[in-house]
Length: 337
Ligand code: NAD
Ligand code: TYD
Image (cartoon, rainbow, N blue to C red; front, side, top):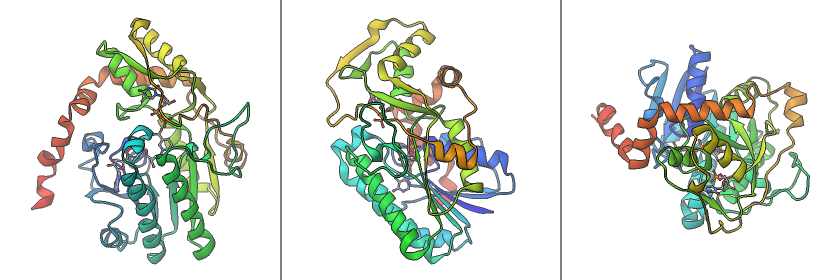
């Protein structure tokens, strides 16, 4: 089986790549990544010499390059590549439309041309917008994105579905909730707060801190993506939730307690514009049809994550300082020869 993973140098993509190479030693995996600020080759240093793994630096918007890769008889594309941070989308929406929508279109078109057997589009719960009252969104609910990030992902979902309906491109869309775990870029809530607390820096809570997110451990996410690749039905959308709704202040308290750091590190700062109050997904379709259940409790997963950031201080210090961007030059110089 040959697969193309896009955005494999980011947080979820790198976890999934390592997971697949370990579980399926005979898969051949291509990783197309532009290496934006969020792409870090150090996330994949343990597999870079694996003969079944090939890294290609490039943009998913480059149709010539994508066609060249798919000509290698790729069976399946898993599209993780995206600009993924809501705050950045408020300052520079253009690159979000480019990578998240135009890039998806290039991949879809190329997938059709090369007759790939499955296209897995990684979407997000943010496409539904904020949940009101005690409801949870299911896959049939309408899309109501609030940020340019969420709007670009929702647009890609609609475009992907049109490729299924119009051209029979075999595709599946997944909408996972907020992920956390090892190798997450320390601009997102959990890794930012763990690393800041370890450095005795303040933890900037937006607004009242009572915003709710539904947290999914990246290891559980990798396992369910694998299940969907094996058993998912084409043309379907699957919400992915392990039902761990927490306020940002609850998460912050758990991190401070685990690290034995004082509460006075918390600093309330002005709120994010159009900040969605609560995300919550109904993922009974996935649970009933594919029999999925997460393996990790939230408490255990958060503890493992905190310990990973404690053990891997070198990793996040290099990320925060920008040092990691020099790794490519050093380790992949031979690719340019
Ligand atoms: P990330 O920001 O950590 O990584 C994104 C990766 O994509 C980086 O390696 C980057 O270099 C690459 N990339 C960006 N633009 C590219 C382009 N034009 N061409 C090629 N590569 C490009 O993101 P993540 O957190 O790993 O998220 C992966 C996917 O999952 C995204 O599609 C995101 O929307 C979705 N998602 C993330 C979360 C989450 O909590 N992190 C939750 C739900 C859905
Ligand atoms: P984030 O990790 O950026 O994910 P998303 O916006 O995609 O859900 O943010 C998670 C929540 O944490 C969200 O409600 C915004 C909040 N937040 C803060 O309060 N302070 C911060 O510094 C960050 C990065 C996020």
